[in-house]
Length: 94
Image 1 (cartoon, rainbow, N blue to C red):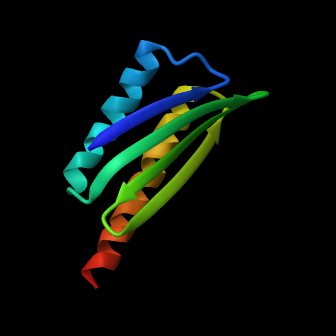
Image 2: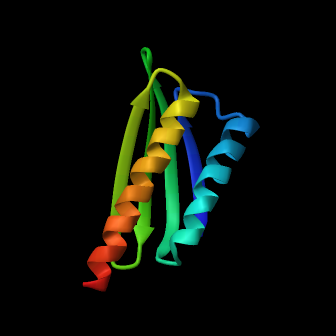
């Protein structure tokens, strides 16, 4: 699984990139249907936006979460992506 992290309007520090990588590594346990992940971190005015585009076997998934700080935005994004993966895997089984 390949994880690409991009920053738009925010300086992408090593700690922030490491935090994203650690959080998305837990998705490997969900199965091997993920081929690549692109995470985009953006700051617009007072909103911190975390977006993820996942290339999965047979399709693509997209999730986005907005918070007042970047770390909670990433945490919320992980929860959304996790829920989408569970739903997608159930769809594949049926």
